[in-house]
Length: 239
Image (cartoon, rainbow, N blue to C red; front, side, top):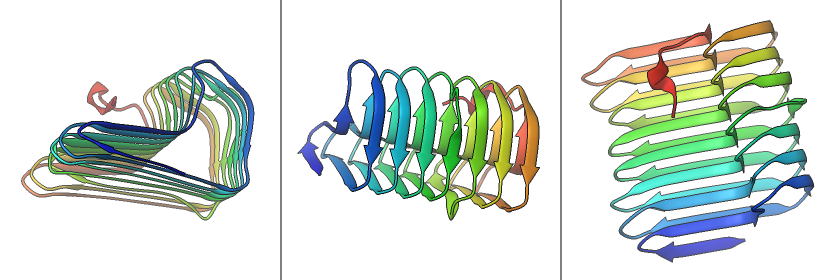
């Protein structure tokens, strides 16, 4: 359990400047960063690359920024994530005055192996300014098999402009199977709202859905767009 409070605040549950080969969490990882006048960043697990990650416990990651930007990551890799299995709970929330961004599982580059969710990934971002939230984010590709059988991948975002995504890839998604629930909601208080259950900016290969994908967007004073599954979207969706 890690709790940090300061003008600017950064908090890490597990941190590696290099790579993590194998990591298993069967207990609780709790991280809270509270900024009283600047930015707040909170990370459950952060590394350059992650080989095999297994979570059957609870991960709770929270960032709160009064007067600044808030960022929160359940699991973050600055390069790739190979194998990822979740049968527990990953709960991530970011609240900021200026902006807020929250990510359940984040790879700057790609997911290269099997991604399997048999649990819950819950993400929320709230800001007076702009807010973004992603259940699962790959800057490039989801190159292996992505399977969601869990209770849910749930994302809720509220901000002046709001963007919410259940599963997002900046490139391609190879194979995606949803047998569970993907729930996404974007609420814009003064601008535009964008919401997508699954979004690959280039293409989606094999897609199978026997579960539920529930997507909604609400915009006060702007445009609201909501889509269940989409291959391709304008560049402004990149975080």
